Length: 211
Image (cartoon, rainbow, N blue to C red; front, top):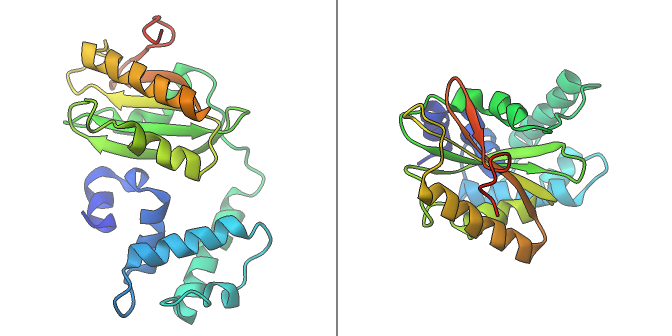
């Protein structure tokens, strides 16, 4: 599914950082796909903590002056719109529920992961899979690869129950324990698994389903 199609169907928040970059870049260049260019742009941004110039971005094959200036414009706009605003803290299951309420009414289960730093500040969230939660679509690789990429110290799992009943199934519980085990190996703590509906939520940590 193309990033623009995914954004229209599931909301812009469902896109990964690479997909957002690909959406901004729009197209690839001479046999070089747009996702590959997006990965190189992302690597450049992660490598350079200082100010990035158009000339830096243009070193990437497939990025001309228009794309370089567009990327810089998006970065500058973000700085101006959010200057002085505090990074969102995720402290409680209710915080997760409020953060994810726009995804609570889906007709299918949407499995998200919230990536946090050591101070419980939200780095980003990412849609991992769509469909009934099971061990194949919530595979540790799909959950922890982006966690490592964004240097998350801890994560919170979250998915919606279209039925309106937030209580976890046996599959929900077993999948959660599998991901906790994988996180322990990688040194990335799974803080909670919050199941959400339009009107309420269920915290597996609070209910003792994670041990």
